[in-house]
Image 1 (cartoon, chains in turn cyan, blue):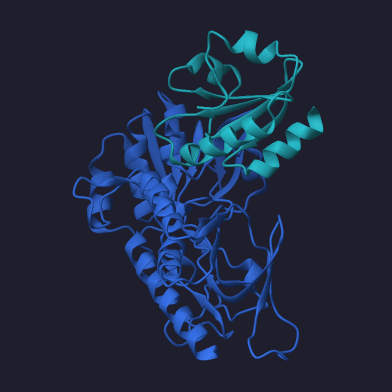
Image 2: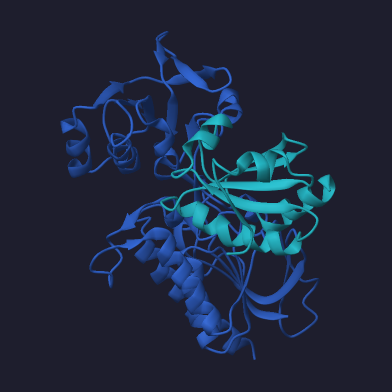
Length: 106
Length: 305
């Protein structure tokens, strides 16, 4: 896939220490709306290449990160800037919404 | 100018698109916010014929999208907020102007297949806890309630199904219903009643959900305070027709009124699926109505020539 696979192991290095805005899509294989969101996030990754980092994290495989950020509903999309969560979306979001928010932040 | 604009990406919309694009009508389908519609929030679909082992709801919708694109339907992720009939009918053919978030579109006919959305209780506290313990999708969010206690609100099949599903994760599931009789089918209700993890609170109304920063409990009109980690809503659906209020006739509950076959009160606008049908509300019925709307639209275009 396009974009990065975030995990409990690489989350700090890839997301919280990222020098550019980073979009994280919390998802799972068994969540229908997440599978609708997935390809949209990949489009966002292509559109924002070089300007923002975009990737997904599977909450099944990486429960620690999901718990740390209090994820209780998926898909949830968080945008990180300088290590902080600056925007949270719950539920499927359009490409335009996500690209718009990332452009505003980058 | 499109021959047909289809609004909605559930079974009704995609089936309509399949028929109009196979009839060589220039077709665009707008997906709306919930791409793939309500089936994407279910798990296995076992009552859609042709899949002897059942099919995953999201997979079925993704397959429908691929199928309509094969015949030339443009599938566009946009949400239509307004439809206007083109300024006085000086031309021979009437047309519609549709306003989306991304653009303005013109079409000779419109098929409304916007479906329905899960209803919320309408409490101010409920919005605050979206993604923090209030959910309308047990299959999406049940996972986060492993070892916790949850409440399901409602008395229909959806409530029973969600409650039963949630027992996979939660230690205790309480169904809160504002009446003491159920709309749920006998088989679903029976399954829920027999489940040792499920209990019922009947004739109870929720007036507030509280917690900080996530849901910790709720208050009932009768004065009781119920501790819970999650509130799953299954209190029915409302049609996604707000944007049609001044365009076509709607009934008291907001469903599109169809006159003859799938024709609405506005010539050239047709409707299909859960935005029309509050009786059956099944994927296969929506698909069937989508087909009808496509054939009605095709006939209408033929007659306009």
